[in-house]
Image (cartoon, rainbow, N blue to C red; front, side, top):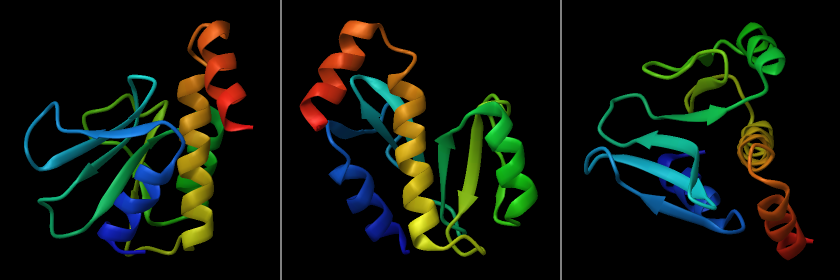
Length: 120
């Protein structure tokens, strides 16, 4: 998956929006106002940073060489996945949706129901 395909996929997630709160080169993808992905566009090696269940975050780092704890983020919950690595596109898409779920489950039940009620 290249960076454009990655951006398009994230933008296609229900309720997602692309923002640039930090600078002009770092895209922050949000659902319901909360970040689920960070995509830097000014690096030589393209990546995406995703929120992850803490136990699964460690397993992912062990399973894939292209996954590491996210730089400048809480490494307990955030992984960076490099697009040129050993993770298949379908697996990457799965982890993008997992990140959205991790973000939504931290919201009040009313907001969770609103989000999931409009998805299903």
